[in-house]
Amino acid sequence: MRDMRRRPTHVNELVHQSIEDVGNMNVSGIGVRRAWMSVIGAYNNVVWRVEWPEEISNLAVSTTNPEGTIFNYDLEMEEILL
Image (cartoon, rainbow, N blue to C red; front, side, top):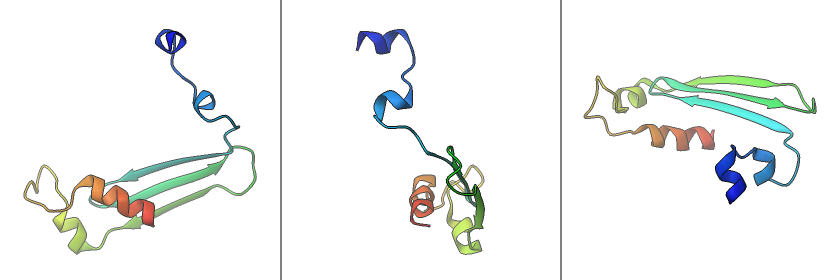
């Protein structure tokens, strides 16, 4: 615990194995964007995008639609399912 106060914790200190994959996602009321990359070159890198249907986009909560019924965390859960 004392060591953690002096410096940031590296992910390899939390997971006791080497990291072989790196992923990144971005979710918005418009859609989902995701990148999945192999750190060790085990497979080709993958990048994909899915646009939400208009009915979903229209229900997403935003500064221009504060009365919406679908929150960003709902869309993030949907991204995980995809």
